[in-house]
Image (cartoon, rainbow, N blue to C red; front, side):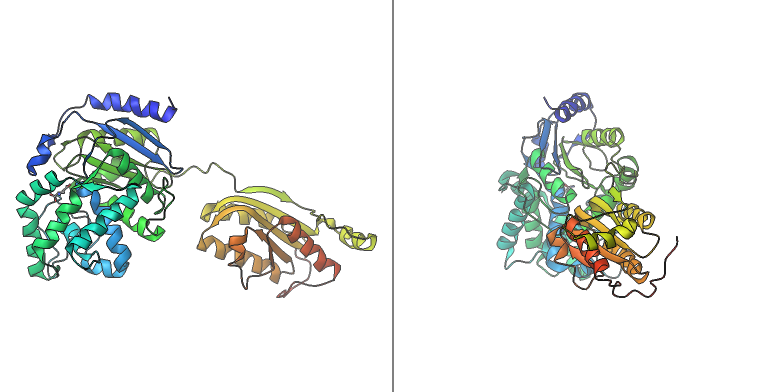
Length: 457
Ligand code: GLN
């Protein structure tokens, strides 16, 4: 057995013994669920799936659907329009609280029922049936398999859902819901009755944790921006009136549902889902909360925990680089005159702020003392965020102004975006170094150089 499954099994064994909490009964059909069922599932960023206990037992998604439908409406409307209809402030109230923003009637956030019903109404579709179908297809894309409805739970909730209908009518009278309240609530009940397993929910959470990319199917389900916003709302509002305590103890964006499901996303690491029906007074599954609290501590998953940078960004620094080009003896003599004139700094991985700061510090240290050339070998770099890209370009432009030739080697996709940037941009370190040598051999000064006097550091 692999070590992840082994440790999940061990956790599952211990937490299974935990009692306490009540199985939800206001939707009569839910009361029939087995309070002893307990499943845990994890999907990693590479799409590996691990599980323990009843991770393949089907139950209804209920409120765990809310962040995903929010992501759909957000994709349809864009962030500004979305915010005009549904707020993003934690309400500090129960999931079914009857409270709307005074004046506008706008619900506090999309994770409480009022906000979720308003969000469902914003999903673009020709009619209610098309809207339900679209939501089902959307949830299925997150899960990576076709999901269906639990018709019994749907009927049970439709027969007992007057409080949610009351919320919808209240929003309509306050002007924050345009659609027919009865029909929108019905679509919401269908959304809540989508049948999933903990294994499905783990893939859905992992898709958010991977910036909108389903790690199992490889499909991009939502944009990175929508995934980030969805996780942000989960972090502040996902656990209802227990959200603050949750952020303190566990520190991960999460969402619970009244049928016993709970998801949490550890961005860039994994999605996790738990299933256990007894709920605490805030409506969150007791065993799931205990298991995640322990896991967060054991694996330092808290969002505010400073990340450990395991890979080094700078791979090497060369102070006297020469290309593999054949040079005749006269050329070699020119290049040998000051062999320390071409410096190379190599880097790897994704360049975010911290990595770029390391890289550019290495560039400053390696810059030749007299006007020469600086080659950045970024061929092993896999991602460059916009802020870091600006920092790198500013550094190159500065080196050029100070009389240095600058060349940068990058993978082709980055190169395609390189128009109008300083120096030479190529795909190999050798080409970049050769380009600098050619400049020395032709006696050229860098374009844009203001000061080619020796620069001392
Ligand atoms: N369908 C449920 C309701 O609206 C969802 C609530 C929940 O899961 N917390 O009451």
